Amino acid sequence: MSQNKLYVGNLSFDSTEDDITDAFAAHGTVTSVNVIMDRETGRPRGFAFVEMSNDQEAASAVQGLDGRDLGGRNLKVNIAKPREPRGGGGGGGGRW
Image 1 (cartoon, rainbow, N blue to C red):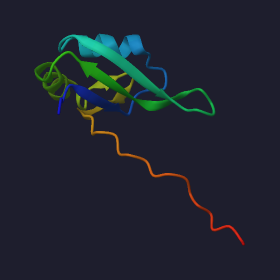
Image 2 (cartoon, rainbow, N blue to C red):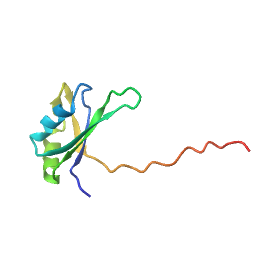
Image 3 (cartoon, rainbow, N blue to C red):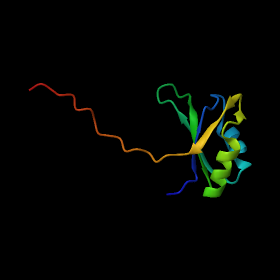
Image 4 (spheres, helix red, strand yellow):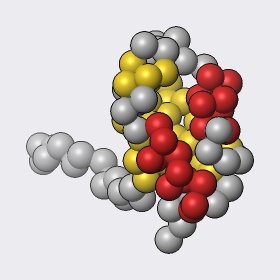
């Protein structure tokens, strides 16, 4: 499995994709930044996923940016875990 996708937590709600790209670009080529937004409010949820062009650049970004300040907050940066499959609906136990 590729380890070039990173989880970035503890982001300031004011951090933009450009801010994140600029910080990570010091460690290699950033191929994508996805700031996670709240579905109901449309505001950032305080974390993002960053994809680097290769595993070595991703490892450099983790080492260089984990715990570093961005927008007044200390970032939490690590290799993203694969998304867990979500279960189907809740059932509910209807009455017969």
